[in-house]
Image (cartoon, rainbow, N blue to C red; front, side):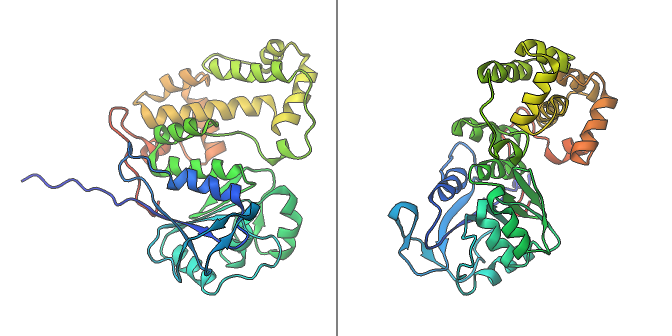
Length: 333
C-alpha cells in the first residue's frame, strides 16, 4: 500500500506592529512574508499582530489595526520591523513571549533598530548581533553582553536574525527564504523585488561614502565580471576593463564595496557555486570549472574558509531537484 506523501505545514509568521511603527521596515516584512505567492505551495502563513491595544500610529500618521495577542504560541517566526533605540516602554508579556518562541525552536528576525527589542529579551546575550551603524555605539553601551558585529548586512544564527538597516532587512529575509524554500524560490522573490538575491560587502559601503568618479564604467565592469566568472579573471583584467590603473581601481573598489577586488571575485564565485550545488548534480570538478575556481581543491578551500562547511555538506543540506519544485524545510529550520 502506498504511503501518503508528507506535506509540511506552512511556516506561521507574525509581524509585530507597535505604536510609532517604522513604516518602511514594516512594508519590507509584509512584502517578504505576507504577500500571497500561490505559485509555491506551503508558503508562509502570515499575520500582523500587536501586544498593544489599537489602533496604532505609524510613521506619517498612518493608523494600523492589528489583532492583539498576549502570546506567540500560534506562530513559528516573529518579525520585528524596527523599534525605538531609546528606552521605549515594552508591552506586557512581549519579552516573555519572545523567549518562549525561541525556546521551542522558533525564529525571531529584526530589521534595523528592531535589534534593541530582541536584545532587551536577553536572547542576544553571548550571541552575535548587529543593527544600523548610526545606533552601534548606543547598542554596545546598553547591551555589553551581546557580541556586536560591525560591517555586515545581517547576522543569522541559532534562529535569531538581525539586519544592519532598513533595506538590509530584505537581505535577511531573502536569506531566510533561501533557507526554507531553496535557491530558485529566493531568487524569484528577489527578481520580483528587483534587488540582488545576495548582496556582497557590509555597512562600510554605506557610511558617508562619496560618489565615485566614472561610476557608470565601474558598475559596468562589475556587471561584466559577473557574466564572466567562469573565466580565470584577475584583478588586472578588471582594472583594464574599467580603464583604470590597478592602484586607482583597488582604491575605488574598496571604497565602494568594503572589500578587495579579489575578495569580491571569490564571494561572487561562491554565490554561483551555491546555486549550482542546490540545483544541479554536477561533480565538483565540473562545478569548479563553471565558477572559475579552476579545480575542486580550490573550490573546497574557499567554501570551507568562507562558509565553514564543505561543498558536499552544503549540497546535502540545501540541494533541491532541478526538475521538481522546491519544498520548504520545517518551520523550525
